[in-house]
Image (cartoon, rainbow, N blue to C red; front, side, top):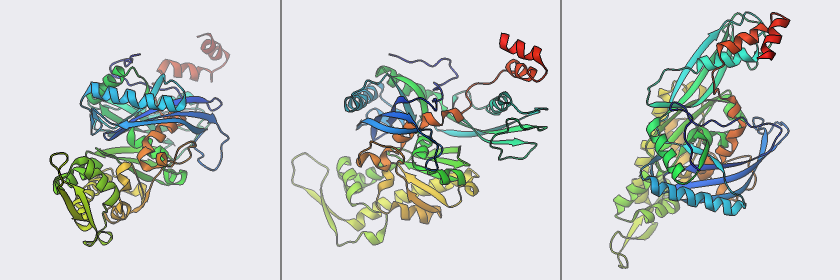
Length: 441
């Protein structure tokens, strides 16, 4: 089955999830180091104090993950290789779940994600209706950006009446003006089309593309963090992405094109060892804190050369730290600069959550606290049943966030309510003729 965008300026949009119906959801997280597919069953749940933003419980039925091929820094560089890896990942998840996948929610890191903000005002003149809210939000989402970009997410983050913001539900209120502020996250079209081509080659239909930083934040930020304002930083293999939440809403995203793979390659080049050995060395022995790495602890690893030779490299943990720490500091300093450039530093305050596979590097949270000058915790996926201990790690945050996404998709503005439809809605205020006309059409 192949998939094509409905029109050249659009991306696939999934329908909001019914709060009273269950659903099987399949997701695919495409990273530079690994691809992960999860199949989960969503069941309606009563609203409660724990995870109040979620309308459904999630039980993971099957997980499949494979080493990523044909992808670099989130961009597809070999369509056939990427398609084979995607197909193998999905097949593994299908075998674990005992189900076949028809369509998928897919993560997107490529495309140089860029946030825009829009706003609009409407003169309701009478009691505000849902059509008024839909209309003003759609107008706020009509932002002019480069023709080479596509709108990935359009999320309203504030409603106001008569200039007073922070309105949760203006329906039924009377005001002179109704205002909306909108966050529109865009991506370059070409990388997205290349990813689409790889998915088509793997015979996959896409329900929606979801920005990786958005998905990771959905999985790791608890309710009070999202409400008070926090930043979720996903440190992947090829890229490090940033998502900022305020008042429970997704308000900003950015990324830097450096991640855990760059740390691995620094070790490989600095010690003249194979990248696979450098990756193991990073995971098992590396630390960003000098006081945890001494010259007394020596590690022996194979050298780079012909297979089967007896040569090896002996290196101290202190030397490993001296290679690793500068790259980690560079990544965190770039993240700090992006947070400052967002003009939302006051929003996140002192709250930062680190997640993603590269965030598990020993000592990283402490180094991040020193550089970002904020409270930092390591974020793991929360509120999902059926995951093994290995799959509860930060490396699977984005995949779990994709399972959560159907519960929040209703917050996004997708289509523009036409002026004619809004006029019909207003006509219901004028009497029976307006009501008859609206129902007849």
